[in-house]
Length: 227
Image (cartoon, rainbow, N blue to C red):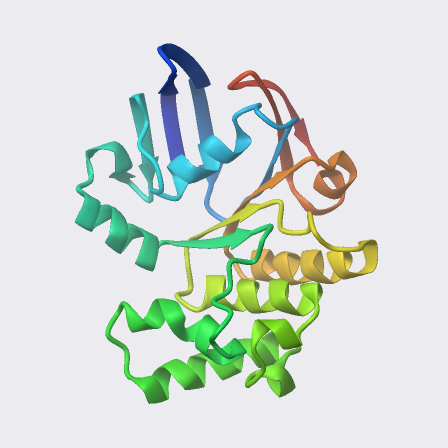
């Protein structure tokens, strides 16, 4: 069953009197439980597509359905609820709150769901243990390495048990050994049943870890490669 269904999806931006076509009428189906890579150079449309899947942006035209719901027709409030309950985000730059401890960063999405502090802390500590950072729960980001911060970001992305995990260059700022640790965590999440979409510039990373690679250029899919 398809978790993601996009049909004739366009995203245009108006910049300085010109129209920039970031996505140009793409069609996409992603099955529940798949691990898909979006591969291409900067400006190919990968991150734009990821933002549309995550409800961070709206298409100019076309249809995009996730878990049977049409995102283009959602109100701002409905999109906010969708982001809190259906998707998890992992970014290249980690996007941790520098003043919060690791467990507080992980628990942050639960605050917006009205979950009490005791339960938030319990879930956050459990996920930090899962990613090998149980002993670092009370450290702030400046006291952690880049790899540790990314593991905190992964734990935060998983705290709501999302159906769809969106990863935008999750290893882009990390060395090779740490990147493999991060990818091992994403593989574990995939084996547990989560659907993953990962933006990457690295074809070897895509080939090794994902089931399907969609190569993009100029806002369109060029080729599809199965692992």
